[in-house]
Length: 125
Image (cartoon, rainbow, N blue to C red):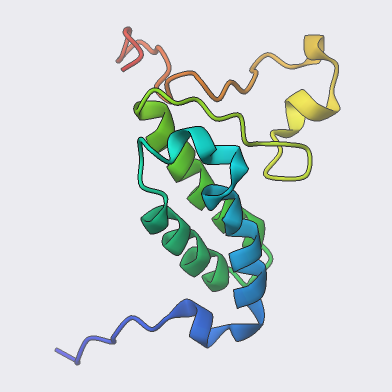
């Protein structure tokens, strides 16, 4: 077998993205998630957000950032702290922001469980 490649720091590989990643991911350490900080340690989520956001350099950069922030929001939600962090500028859910309420069949709710009721999971867990 060939030698395994060592994971390299994505921000060292793409230094032009490091400042942007730190600035964007600061939402995790900032006022938006303040109520969650004493329930869920934010530092590991912030560090992962920066690394993931540095690594996304192919047009889907915001997707990696949004996924990383959503991971912290989910951990907060599981600790019974609901954080409505999405805005039209930060990781928007397009249907709710850009259409009349009657046009959308599904509506984003940051406080709901991520598991929906289905035939296989009628309790939604």
